[in-house]
Length: 371
Image 1 (tube, rainbow, N blue to C red):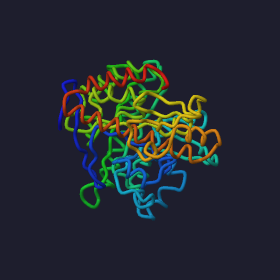
Image 2: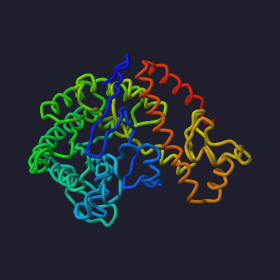
Image 3: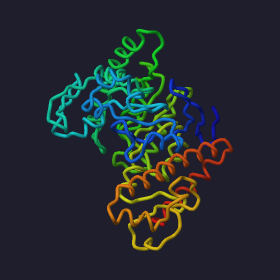
Image 4: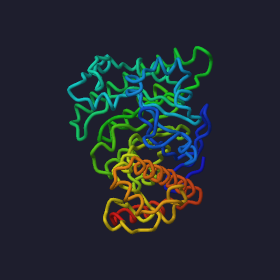
């Protein structure tokens, strides 16, 4: 493992479906697909690992069907690594449609209103059926800002659920020898540094091959996200991967890496693409703007992706104006490439000890607004 003077790490995560160079960005493939991209395109872009959503796959088409069809990799014809979340964030986002107890989360499906109970054991069972390379334990994600007593209660429940999930996993995943799946614990504690440290210590006592930092980037200031991340990574084992969940904007990614984060995911590159927002080396491009009607330049002159090599800003603006599906496909291809390329540059900057300068350049570039 290589380290930058600021604390960033460069390494390699070996999974049953190939090695993943870290720090790594994981495109989000909620329903076993990254919206707007084929698996061929993802492989061409260099995505070594993607994220899939346990909640959505459990409800449709169902984890037992996916198990019967050979697991998630075979089902979606994806050769590389997959991380599945626990479904916790999705059920906690259901509001009045769910009820949380120490047993688990009882909720009604957003699809048909059917009632379900998601327990730590059930979340582990579903992910074992999916056969992902990395599985997340069920945790309690709370809103920010949160009162201290609420954060303390969520931390206690998260630790209890982690113990149950780990026990279930070790019993059922190891029946045929060494588990082919890694199970990560998730640190909670809201925006209280001492609670973050306590959560990390409790999870380390349980023992996981990797740890995630959850419950951040949910409305708090970016500086506070960085502060809580630093509080957590300072305690986590240096030899195990660290995953910051649900982040971030292009100018923020290097800041998280500087704080010892190895993996991250975010829907932003795909969601922004569908809303005609493109990320470039010159900043954001809001392609529906009338200024691009006759613009013959590529989306990003410095980008070598298939979209930038072939199409102009004028053409992409026309596709969005005409409501063509191709617009979102091309924009998504470029944005995902942009994020993956940022990670390539971050890894290179770590190798040469230049990450602080690269992070500063990113902040400056995106502070200037749309290009």
